[in-house]
Image 1 (tube, rainbow, N blue to C red):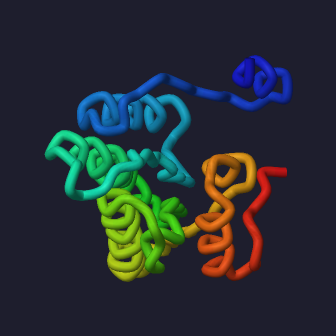
Image 2 (cartoon, rainbow, N blue to C red):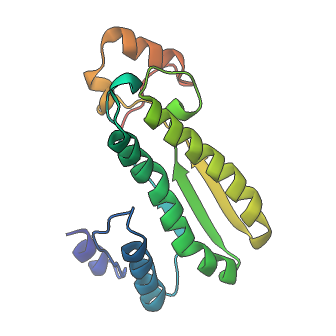
Amino acid sequence: DLAAELATAGVTCLYRKVNGTDWQATHDFVADVEKQLGGVDVLVNAAGITQVMPLALMELEDWDLVIQTNLRSLFIATKAVVRGMIRRKSGRIINVGSMAGERILDVPVHYAASKAAVAGFSKALSKELARHKIVVNCVAPGLLDDGVGKNLSPEKLADYVSHSNAGRPGTSA
């Protein structure tokens, strides 16, 4: 529906369902975008999942699932677009981290570790790509009132809000 709506506005839209942890599928999609549209100007890495469980109950598969989704997919997508951006001496990469990767919060350790790694990846890549006129940023949103926030206990919600620069949950509106 969105592609049709964009087409009526004269915008070409390519879309495909791709598992972000799949190297080949991601690179194939980016190659198609580059062939048909000339390149990727902006990449937003926004994949993220978590599981609510303490480390003592966490299995290796649990750890791997979160790290693969939150970090590996970011690496794969970035790697797929970065050479084209370097060739064009232009581009923007926006990585979505989390407040949980920057502050001590009561969140699962694999989620916090993955989002802290997103921040570190972003900082290092920003330095690496600056000479090619490519800007890399990491945004670290806090809790949204209509997402995970609506299922939190009042005590946990108060803890998150106390770490928020805005002093309140975010809104999706």
